[in-house]
Length: 375
Image 1 (cartoon, rainbow, N blue to C red):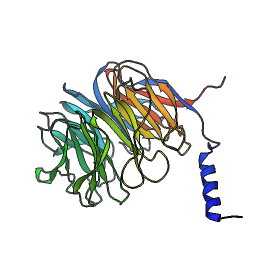
Image 2 (cartoon, rainbow, N blue to C red):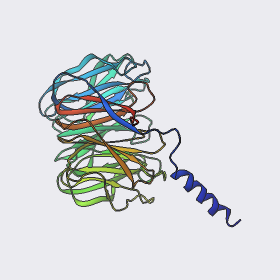
Image 3 (cartoon, one colour):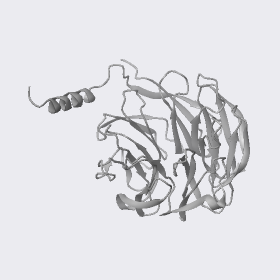
Image 4 (cartoon, rainbow, N blue to C red):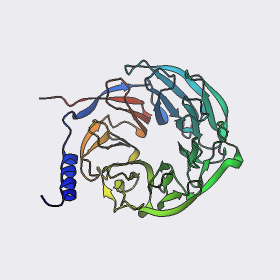
């Protein structure tokens, strides 16, 4: 019979290569516009804000020009009503959803560009939000933010991707407080996105910081207590990356990266299984300018897929074959505006993830998943 371990590996490899029988090819042709006008939106977040079991939306708006952020509540079937605006008009780039005060519901941390304060809004559990304080510094040129437990105390901290200046993170005092004394620099300059994930498989959250302005993109390894050191160079030394996302694209248990470079296109960076990355591989049309990336299993085949939003071009969904190298592409949406932000979730309750897109210069939209029409 030969070596049973070799035989088992062959069987597992064969099974992994098979397309599951219940997987359907999906398209995203059914569009719902969330607003009647086109504004300078920057991001969209998905989460159950009111505790009713379906997924709601937060639109982060403004960028360089103050606008009010907006809460949209779902009726469970993919129809949304404006619940309220979130505070006053400000220059928002992202609205991060996380349980910041430990009471079991989703709160919001807003990343605003200078000179606006970066704000924390606490949820009463029914999508009524109260401004509770600030985080970071108003003078930070902050773009996107993220939330993750960086120091192992079981509460989410806030990470700021700062353009030009050093990026930073602010430690949660376990009561959704983020005083100036709890904010620390990351030795990285000029970022518009930072991706938190465990890239070296040691159980804590590291930070991938793609360089925005012609510099080196790096992984900053966590010592488990919120101390970071640069350890791994990602890609080329002349990165102009605007966006990135992490996910296990080849099912090997290690986090991979997809990075969108404004000048060079989009690339998959597969983990080498040692905390580093293999040589990058191009994904999609290098002539298109990527502004946003999300990773999720969109066709429920157990494999991670990649969604990319572009400038003045339809978006792309790349359905993964499970090896991180081979993808089949479909397009969605139109060529209006720039897709600054993407979020993925089942918004109409049919069991399949949908795509929410925040666009600047075009109406914000949801693209609902549906089966590929049969001839």
